[in-house]
Amino acid sequence: MAAPASTAVDNSKATGWPSPVYAWYVMGVMVIAYAFAILDRSIISLLVQPIKQQMGVTDAQIGLLQGLAFAICYSTFGLVMGVITDRTDRRTLLAAGIFLWSVATAACGLAENFTQLFIARVFVGLGEAAVMPVSGSLIADYLPPKQRAKAYGILLLGGTLGTTAGNVLGGNATAIAEMTRAIAPASIDALANWQLVFIAVGLPGAVVAAIFQLTVREPARREVSKQEKWSLKPVVEQVRLNAFAYTAIMVSAILNVACIYAQISWVPTFVMRVYQWTPEDVGWFLGAAGIVGATSSITVGWFMSWLIAKGRDDAPLIAIALHGITCMVFGTIACLSPVASVMVVAMFCKAICSNWSTSALLMGLSQITPNEQRGQLVAFYTLINGLIALSAGAYIIGLLTDTVFTEPTGIRYSLTIVFACGGAGAALLVWAGRPAFRAAAERAKAWAEKS
Image (cartoon, rainbow, N blue to C red):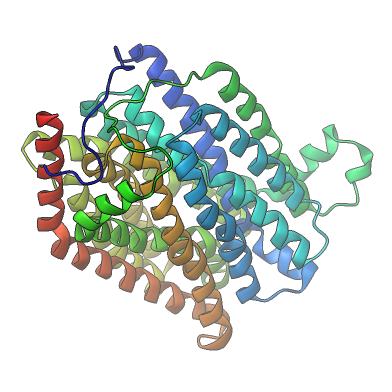
């Protein structure tokens, strides 16, 4: 492979892989950290109604709180985090991020108006900007290539656990608030139930940050190319060489993730408005769907490993395409169903592939990207993912509901548009980009063998 982004592999500092037991312990801690990240990010979706009642905000403003407020720093600082990830101590970077987003989540519970809540959500995004670049990079240095597909899938298990916990805790806000009042100072009695939920789910993350910093070691970097430090030229050349491959895998994953964030942000409100479910009912339903979704974190790794063993270097793209098809088909059925029972079955079917795209994206980037550029490429993905999937996905649904589908049940049509267009677009882009991705994977393998 003619590698303009790198000239030779330097594994002089990587004498052997870490102990498998310790490597999987680190994976376990990262799964827990990621679960708290998604919990703190998504808990607001079950608290929409009480926040609206207390602060008098619109659906569009709620969309901003769930999307843009979080995505501002999550996306833009992700690029900085990517560069730092590729050049410095990754465990300290992630530990600091965990601590920041946890404290910021608790601060959401102290907000007295829309502006204060918006600012707190911005800092949640700043802390979480470290999650994907650092985790993706650490996995590649803790586990050999043959185990990475499964590891990336297991990492996303944390996302499902976090979403499930958020649904259950948010749906039972009153009970959580009462337990918090029982153990907290009397000074918080004036806070509303939804505010206490933010505090209750935010502060425990600080303990996870301490555990990560104290027990996780920085591993030796592997598959490293000799390049000038702090230079963006190699990564620019790498992207230019494989432009359509990167475009296909990143944009298709983003379209599917937009469907996921739309679901996380607005499906609780959808089922309460359309089927008149209580928050408690919604919490347990989405929690059960989350258990089904948890299996997707495991199945995607095995599915990609099976395809790769059969010589299919485009396994990540195939996984993303299947995820898009399930979003399009089952998401549409769920939203348009006149009866709750069909909606429930369709949502469960949709959950089967819920974590496939992000896992496949991380695996695909590791296939075609040198080690010291992976953090930057994941961070770039995080940027455009935040701008499109996180910001636009949540906001568009709120805007359509405020201006086009203005009846309370109109939210079903806003969600249908996102699920159908996002899933179909992802599947079509993958189909067009598979040849370019296979060529990029072949070049990467040839270069690694030659080096």
